Length: 245
Image 1 (tube, one colour):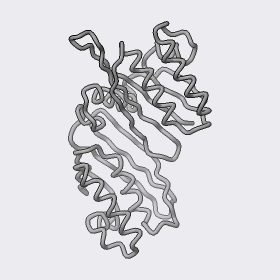
Image 2 (cartoon, one colour):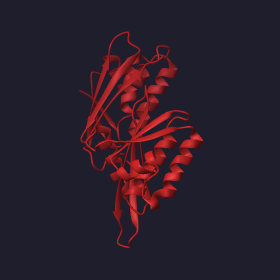
Image 3 (spheres, one colour):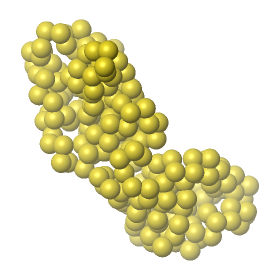
Image 4 (cartoon, helix red, strand yellow):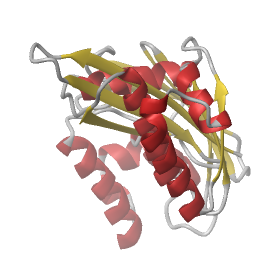
């Protein structure tokens, strides 16, 4: 089952117009959580929340079921029962039209903001409204802790991340045919969770993963060397620091 946790943030401007932000955390089986956010002009918070649902439908796999988690009852009424406020009818129809076009079987359920992925969506929405492009950076600390758990011989690793206001955990499938060792694959997956400008404190990375990250040229095969070097370059370009603790 695919799950999307959505939230919105809204503020009225001095001229009477409203500016909003939406955020969503998309969970797909066998993949790390994906974060999306955006800024928009919106008449109220409900409209921004429905935009988050629309973007969740657009980001979800075609032809599969999607459960949207929200703490907004108006959104649940619109999406689940078609009984929301009249001024949201056009937006609700757009959501259902997009879901029908993509073959996404959509349902909406209530989730309290205290849930970890709801907190993540809330931070994304707040940052988007403020015009901050780095997901969660405006409200979270400048570092995150990552724990990599991998058992020898197993075709997967578990990656857990913790930063202020957000905790993530996911199982990362490892490709046994890859020229990149499994432990290095797990590390590269963990680094993708970092936010721009963040210091990533990684625990339990294997000695091989640490060595390859610090000096990609240690990889003997060109394809593996290029993959690690590219990941390092992307992290450097975003101001991400990877520290092994």
